[in-house]
Image (cartoon, rainbow, N blue to C red; front, top):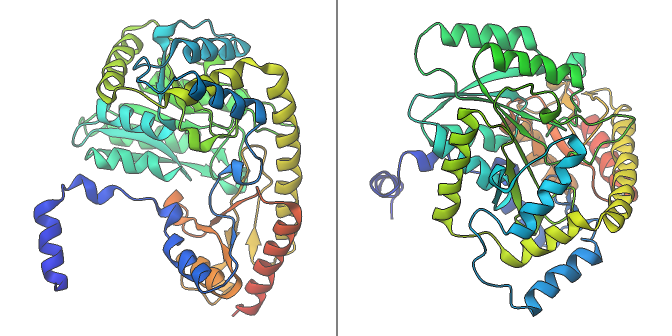
Length: 416
């Protein structure tokens, strides 16, 4: 079949919005798999998947097996099993929240929560605000609904601080058109891909912007326990001060169980906006029937067994801190890279000096790095920063030392 015939079939068959659906974090996977089949060993620093390096704790696995043995393989309550919802209520008491079961929707990971949010809120031409660098799915889901992202900035030169003045100006300019008032402002804390941990004063400034512009605030806090280097985490719910807001979280990172696909949406307010959202997201949950029932039981145990969780998370954070700091210290030896220390998550987001290297762009850089050195990275373009790339600092220290040594030598080999 000819290329033109293929294109015609796609145009006739596929919806326009399907063209936006992709995962550029994994764009080099086909090439990496081809290289592996040829016998080349690949060091994978591109995907944040903790269980590959920190096995899911035994007490959580045992709870999953227990659920299977008890026959908990049916559709659970659509909005989430009461066992898990009650566990989430318990978890958020540490942030001073007194939730009830109507405030919580269990989703198939944060990815499904993003789908719910944009499908429910965004019509053609509607706007939503994200901060660059951003997790790629934030913009993808807006565009999938034919919405228009407004992108604020986080500034590398100021340790990835949010450019509040720039954000206010951008919102003022967009609002002046009188069309499609922005529906929400999305933040990530701790941040993917930079590892930035927003302080209380940062969050307060963001809340003020949302309040002044009548915006729903959404905070993706999936890494809220993976905080280190003397940083302290503050949840948006601790400073939101009556502004309608929503927290996204789940089991994937803090409870080391990405494959369970358990997320939760927390909507604590009692205002009209919050109550409308709770009702509509409940409709979405009913429409998709259920999440993974035995996984719900396991995640409820993961949350409620605080003794075992404290042991697991303390070890995990200690190791990630050492590994992330090692990556940064090794990258600082590279004259072609600018890098900031991470304070949370497990990501490092260096900037390349392309004027001093032979690569035309970051895609060229990461592709060549994979082919020549067998190290798989993620380019910065999917995050809105094409001069950067992302490193996942999860593998053991000896693996990271070897891979970053390869990277540094690679840059020297390809200097102009």
